[in-house]
Image (cartoon, rainbow, N blue to C red; front, side, top):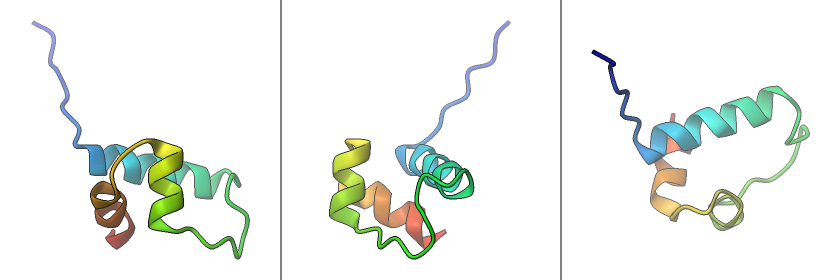
Length: 54
């Protein structure tokens, strides 16, 4: 039987932001706003806010 892994939107956003920061997509000193990130990632601001809190 195959296991299915469920990930919340906030978890997915966190993983994406962490990856982008570590790989240099966002340069040092870049100001990241909830509105900008929610537009880029096509999610509401709530999961962005939850991911940033981590």
